[in-house]
Structure formats: structure tokens, C-alpha cells
Image 1 (cartoon, helix red, strand yellow):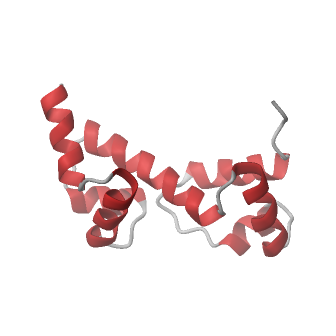
Image 2: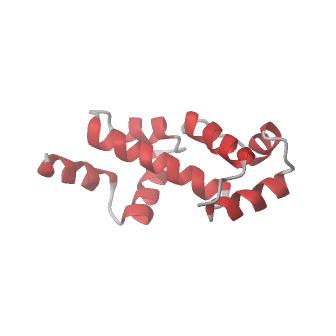
Length: 112
């Protein structure tokens, strides 16, 4: 397997470190010393996702972990994972997993 561009690795590290923080693409690009356009192009070439799509995936993984392993409310999980509001979070859950946040939590309770 080919190594990933170190600038994209650094960007992913930045994004993963604080999934709840809204990092604009231009800020990430600047931190890895690329123009916004070049960063987006290179990021997609390396990951097959746009930076925004990748960030949503990071947030969804964080949210899934919290849904399964915490007693936080859906509203608190949405905020902790970096979603603007619970309804946006719920829409993303349905789009990403095909079910609502409460259904994910319920599956965990039945399984565990």
C-alpha cells in the first residue's frame, strides 16, 4: 500500500483530535501549508472523501461511541460530536446508518 501524503495525514490528525470543533477547510489547509483548492483536491485523491465528508465520518464515529457507551442525552451527544443541533444530528444518523440515534442506542441495549 502506498503511503499517504504527510500533509493529509497531518490534516486528518487535526480533524480527529477535536471532532466537535468546527475547523474551516481554509484553516486546515493553512496549517498543512496548502492552498484550500490544492488541499481539497489532494485530500480527495488520498482519501476518496472531501474534507467535509471525512469530518462527518469522524463525527459519526464519535457519536456512535457515545450512543453506545454513555448515558448522555441525544442533544448532549449531538453537541459533543460537533453537530449544530439535534435535528441535524438525527438527519445525519438516518443518512449514515439508516436509523435514528435512539434506535442505535436501543440496539446496543438489546445486544448488551
